[in-house]
Length: 207
Image (cartoon, rainbow, N blue to C red; front, side):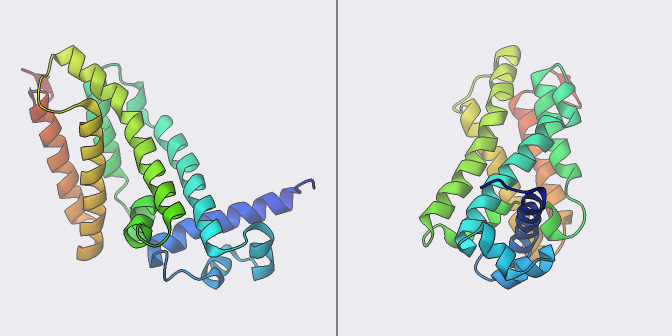
């Protein structure tokens, strides 16, 4: 069956609504009705595209990956020549995203996995793939910075890439607990300082 433009647009509206609602309410509290209301569509339209709330969440995780992948791939820090500069500018970019209401800057995968890891294995796997997929985009720059600055330690580019995500996801949790982005901004600053220490950089100068 050929998909019409209207059908494609309605599915995208549902996915975008799911990103907003799940990040605001969490997966368990989100109802199909909530997503339909946020999208401005009927339940009939919802069930035309998705057989269940879990099917929507799986599709939303994939859509989240596409949207964020494009956003990071086109971010200004990607144009920097030095790999350490790119890594530090990536962290600055993440800090710059801590604006607006909590659901607008927190992570869909991180929000869902805290609820579903023991009860919805397919969703847990989708969240893991989302986070690990982003980790993989950071590893080449970290590895290149290790080579360039001849840094040695009991860690790997992959472990540092995972650590950056652990720090960011933890910052999101604290922001939710404190009701605002200020604490998250402090945590991102600490992350930046930690990486500067690892690579022996102080005030932007390698030593």
